[in-house]
Length: 255
Image 1 (cartoon, rainbow, N blue to C red):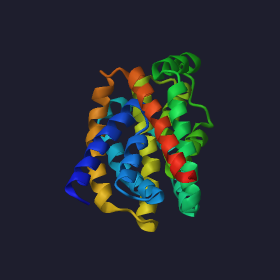
Image 2: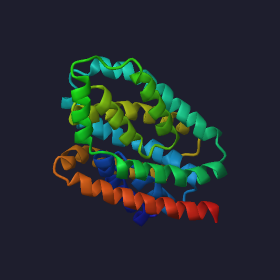
Image 3: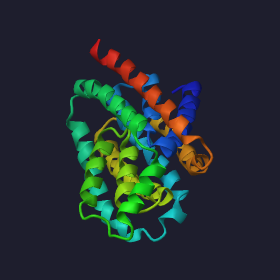
């Protein structure tokens, strides 16, 4: 790993951490950055998952005020997140690398479309609060958390968007508290998958370290930036860039 590549991955990590806070799509920045350094797709995905652990640490540490009073809910959802992350990691490790290369363009395109077409989080929060009020969380919420966590353990792009929308529509909480809950739950799923990859898959630590440093910084800065950034414009720009990336990866995979 050369010095320019090291600095490039640190910068990409910061950008991915900020993107994750704004749009829930950190992997749309960090994954192609690893590909750009020459890593093959499966190795890049494994390394990316390991590095993303520090993004979760940074985001959760910056969201502690919003997590107050959500301890019991977090514990309920943690089991689904842990099991889902493990299942997603197992699915990735059992998928042939050629198949993964062909699947990823579709996953990136789907993630970008979800971001492009999704209603603004504040509108979802208002709808969820109006519909749920003071009602308890639905019993199936841990199962829904498990399903999103499986996808997060396998690849992850847009898992944050899906998890946030799920919590906004079902818990009756506002955007800030739902986003903090998302950071914890998805962070657990990602950590479990990362542990599996460290033990069973080829992690390129020379790339994971600089990316993780950047992701931690971006995760710490993210909640502050989100309060001031023009989120709708940024989300659309990220989505369009993601669609372009999907086309590029698709041409590579099928040519």
